[in-house]
Image 1 (cartoon, rainbow, N blue to C red):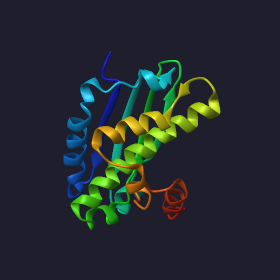
Image 2: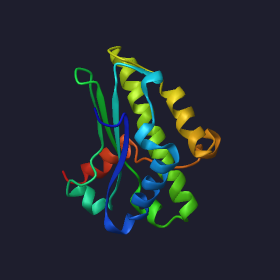
Image 3: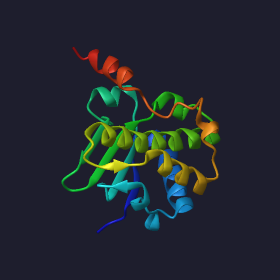
Image 4: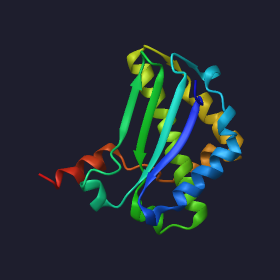
Length: 162
């Protein structure tokens, strides 16, 4: 079996800092041995892909959000887009927090989906606490950080294609 917790990114080249930040986060949490089992009964593996693409690319199909859980195969694949313009125009410290917030929101998506389906138990709050503790970041420091384009904003952007 592969890693229980896998973080990667799909980015536009001018958002390359996302890749650096994801690597740094992976090192800090010791991604290769980061366990999710204490927080999950029914999900053995999580893949979180941080997306960061300009709106034009998103209109062309890049960086689509994905919130997929296979209860049968016991894995989750979550891909949430970060607002591109806000990311590339932010200072590095803010970019870092945006990526962290994206990962936290991805973990929360899994918790929400599991609680609605009742086919798996997933303690997203506990996993978020463990994740942030490993990074030395408080949840309060993420309160005003925008790390994800909301579903509503994404639908509005895609409606311009009609």
